[in-house]
Amino acid sequence: MTALRKTFFIIMPQDFSDETKDTSQNADRNDSHSVFIEGELLTMAKGKWIGYLSGVGCGIIFGFSWFSMKKILLLSSASVVDVLSIRYLICSLLVLCLILTGKRKISFKYSKKEIGLLFLIGLLQPTMYNILEFSALNYISSSETAILCSLTPLVATVLGAIVLG
Image (tube, rainbow, N blue to C red; front, top):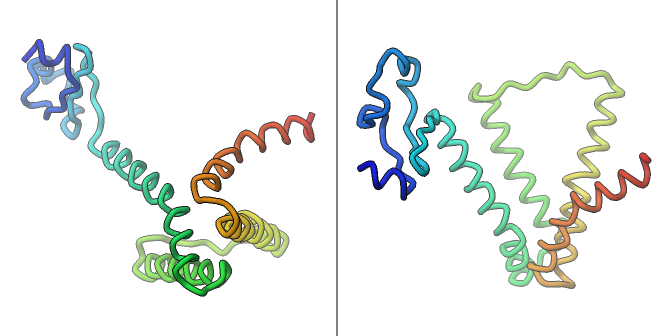
């Protein structure tokens, strides 16, 4: 077992690990797992695994959004705005369900100025971004669109340096 720990990435419950037999040092680690990487013992809470899996799932869904939107636009006669309206409607209904069931709470303690700014940000970032992004799918491939969209942080950094000094 020791040779395997030094060569492979092994995940096992702490109870079975011979490095964690001392209960005085590990009394607060009851909900964790032991991870051995090249002989090093690391502990990770169970909640972090769910976070990592959620992140991978989100990345997969995000990665397929260009491909699936390209297929939807090719197979249907709907415009980009029609498809995005349905997409936002579904998301709004899901968020409304979360709010009504009490899983999420929302606060409406904003001034009129803040609501105006939030509306402007909501109009520019997800709405205009998605309309322009998915309109580009009518002219270039989904992989080219994904590459151009992934350049956003670089362009924002360069423009920020130029504009802000």
